[in-house]
Length: 287
Image 1 (cartoon, rainbow, N blue to C red):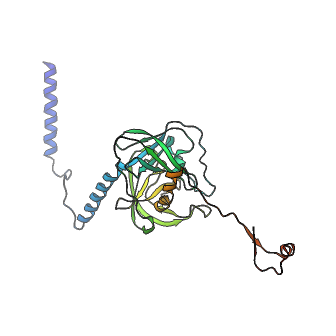
Image 2 (cartoon, rainbow, N blue to C red; image 1 turned 120 degrees about the horizontal axis):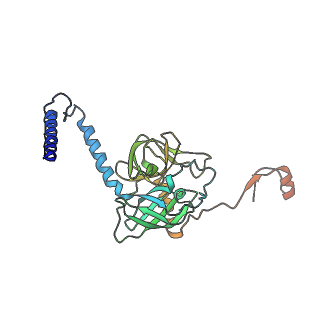
Image 3 (cartoon, rainbow, N blue to C red; image 1 turned 45 degrees about the horizontal axis):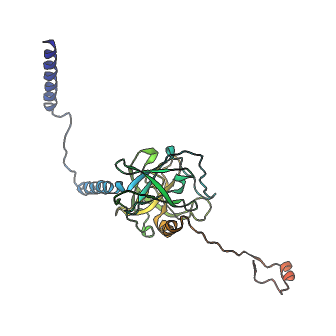
């Protein structure tokens, strides 16, 4: 009898509380009217949400099943790279057959690579090609169904001030979406060389975002997030047009066959001219 009385008392208290909440006008407002001029902003917000929902299934987590000592094999002029949370990076699918892109520095020299798809499905990936100089890696997963791929845009027509989205796994927090603008194009970091064409953005890029896509509002990949300034909201992405240049070679040969010019030049001094038996010191000596 006492148990039934306690249950009845609790039900009465809950019902009484609900009635009190319903009968307490002025404490809060459940639904407000749309302020003048806000309808377009709400439409824009809804469009962004729908776009992010459509894009996220093409972004993956890239993890390593073995944690050996890693030699990133990066040239001296490469910008400072973030320390990835226990070997977790990002990537994105570029072909329904299972081809995907990530950063070379995410892979290092470690062993088996595991890719986690949106929804939690995991699969082992093979390295099709990789290049330390451009910090690009092409992977492939073999699954019995076609995957949802992201279209690649044109980074050459990207404008400073244009809105962009970054999707990835910062600090291992899966499938996070941030928004910002293109702050600058053609940004050189360190010694000017192969890395003098970075896209700079204030979209939040953190450790774990490396290898994930930077996208325009058409849902096209315009860059590959690869570096950040520690403790600053400044991120950098490899232009997707640069990746397009090298992806076919990574697929066919597994690496980029860099060319070189096998000559050097020097000033034709009087001593060299005399030794070579030429008159005057106009011109240069080609070796």
